[in-house]
Amino acid sequence: MTWVLALPLIIPFFTAVIAYLAKDSTAGRWWSLLGSILSLFAAFVLMVIVLREGVVAAQMGSWAAPFGITLVADLLSAVMVVITAITGLAVAIYALSDIDVAKERLGYHALFQVLIAGVQGAFLTGDLFNLYVWFEVMLISSFGLLVLGGSRAQIDGGIKYVALNLVSTILFLSGVGLLYGMTGTLNLADLSLAVDEVENTGLLTVVAVMFMIAFGVKAALFPLFFWLPAAYHTPAFSVSAVFAGLLTKVGVYALIRMFTLVFDHDVAFTHEILLWIAALTMVTGVLGAAAQQDFRKILSFHIVSQIGYMILGLALYTPLAIVGAVFYLVHHIVVKANLFLVAGVAERLTGSTDLREIGGLYKSSPLLGTLFLIPAFSLAGFPPLSGFWAKYLLVKASLDIEAWFIAFVALAVGLLTIYSMTKIWGEAFWKPHPAGVEPELRRMDRAAAFPLLLPIALLATLTIIIGLSPEPFVQFAERSAEQLLNPEAYVRAVLGGAP
Image (cartoon, rainbow, N blue to C red; front, side, top):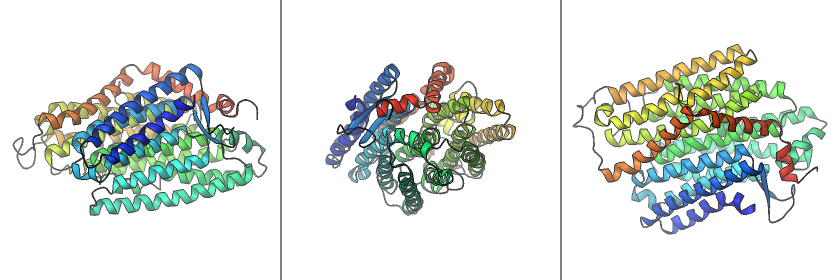
């Protein structure tokens, strides 16, 4: 079982080494693409095993838990590994046309694969210290990708990104130290049992809030989200897409994991805080998006807004709400990465992402307009696309426990999301180009267009499939939620029975 859990980590790291050695030639991009294909295959193998056998765990170096390094995959971990591999492959294809030779020689493909490995490691790790290690792998590689090219805007965004993430790291490590001092373990399965023996529950709640803030920075929660819209619009579109799809979701995943498996001793307090944070994150994110006039800045603020929906599911802490959070997590990765890919093609055709300076995209490229509408409508929650079912589950979970205000907030934010998507459609696609309609649009040859449009079409198709056939995906989310709320199988798989 060890090799199955380790492959999603080994493949991207090995690919990164090969891609770096080949960075002075065009071979690096093809090695990155091959590695992404193999990573997807390994992810599917892991998913099949988890579906067949339940929670699977492996101890690295044959050191028994909780003393060694544990890799573990339940349904949530497995689906996050799969969706990460899908996103990674889509971006690897897109990068064939998006990333120029100069960025390749600076090591883009190696950094990209290390980032994927860091994300996969965070989803598969079974202990807190190694979660910190994978966070640092992601931070280093993502900073390298963010400043690749060295423009003034990139450096400015990169400094803000790293500065706040370092504060998050300090809080995280401080919380790890305090938690270890109280329990004597950092293994997540062991922690779920050890926290029940802690006498000073007040201090345990303080530590829980420290983790909430640390992971809240990673997830871009209110009021710690300002680094995201300052950074995500500056790098190459391939980088923006993988950041938008994956990085904040690692923070959300960590919050879901910790506040279902470990910090469930004071739900009335901790999850009430999460509820208010979710509402404020949704509202501030969508208002920020409504005020923007740049394609990528609008999408960046909407990342913040949509993260609020995921945290809402965790905050409500009912079985249906957790189902909604898991469903929303998967849906949003696909949709948001796709919208950034569309923005890249729009910029390639018109020369800008400023909505006031572009237009005529639908007349120039009806296919691109259609491919934009699918993820845009899904993000806004139009039936029968995936976003509708995600929002429906969360709103219903709110109404079931008579949380009328938060249900109203979720619906109102959905309406404002429609406004932002309509603004992009009206300005970028429908209105004529300010400098003259079609002749001013820069044309792409087919060789350049195919790698750009193929991943967009594939991700849009996945969005439609989830929307038109939601039942198997909802059932999967239900099983994932059941494992999260009843972690006995997780604990047993890691510790091998009663401690």
